[in-house]
Length: 211
Ligand code: AMP
Image 1 (cartoon, rainbow, N blue to C red):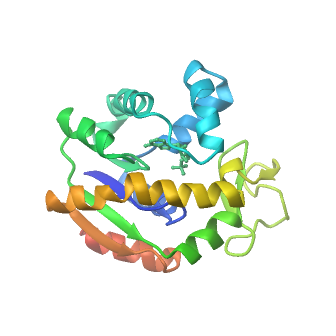
Image 2 (cartoon, protein in one colour):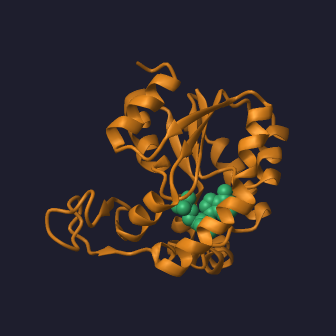
Image 3 (tube, rainbow, N blue to C red):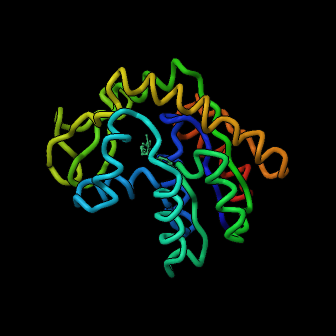
């Protein structure tokens, strides 16, 4: 099963992808995670990507397309994958189509701006293991400390208020046109992502005929 999870930042794509991965054995490919890893390592790609990411801008297409194509060529992707956060522009979607990768379904997470801002501004991330918490919705057992590895939780630079607003504008301008692109391919299913995780997961499972 090869899937694309489309939707604004904060819609819950990553959270639902992790749950689907746990029950199906396909892999989650988050270009955001791959880029954050590159920044952490200080690789050439990381150095080029960092300033775009911190400002909430998109990293240039050619960098992200190369990164994604390398990743999906790895053996663990043979059984299937969820692309979480890719494509984010029409040229990225065209590059994927042109590479001959056949996508079974595009899941479109629809979420209100109010919900997105509440989720992103309260999100806290473990710098060590990447676990995600939320100050109100998913609080860690001990404030500011990761439940999994006990390292300190941080607020991502791009989860700060100015960057959130920019990310929303970038989404509207550059990523939302993909909804029309995949509708035209008759490949899109809508999910109400304003719900809690359980509701959103159930609707996604139903849309993918997993239940
Ligand atoms: P995410 O974790 O998916 O919200 O991504 C974090 C940041 O990584 C984004 O705000 C972009 O700067 C960058 N990024 C992730 N995926 C892409 C992509 N497909 N195209 C361009 N930039 C991306």
